[in-house]
Image 1: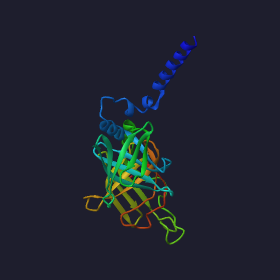
Image 2: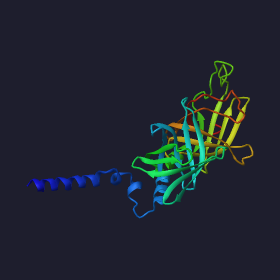
Image 3: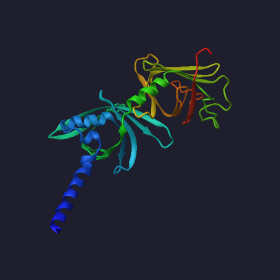
Image 4: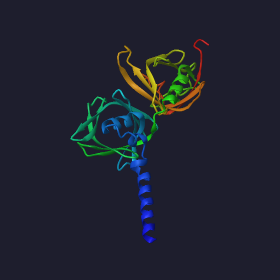
Length: 282
């Protein structure tokens, strides 16, 4: 009887172990593709998901990264003051001696390239830089929300004007803004269905205008505004705004306002901007 009991316990143990171990109960992209190669499985995992980049034994979050299937990746870094910085990189996966490596080329003017040894895990992907031996981890935050982003983009398309006085009131000569509110100050956006946008800001005597391309990150957290140079030939900078609130008729962005002319009357610190729909000429 005791022997039968032990056998039954062992059967239960192995059943629970194989049914409940991380290797078998992990994220779908890690476990449910036995017919795919490791390279394809990891590529699918990268492109279909949203990631946080952690370092220092996976405890310090340093960026949010979103991979695209056309070989680009968007990195968004949040600073302590609430501002955000955007970087675009190129990525590819390479195999050497049955090992898989993620190669990231940084498009930040320094022409840096990092190669990381890749290990998929239940929580995400662990990486080791083969040059510096720095260890990073991509922490899985969930799948991309394609339908949600499409709806947000549809709701954002149109003409918008700031609901309140958009610019800063300065306390010292070095601050952005003016000491008194400017008369007829305005901040306007036009987000078009073809992916282009226009931004106008100014007052009764000054109008600053910029054009470019816009999109919403595939986690629905940020609005990216890629500002073109005056000739419209290349991207001059990318402004990142956190989307705090959005409906079909209003939305709120959190960002620091910049302009190409670096006119300090129309720049701001990090703050929230409220907008509502409007009809030009109304």
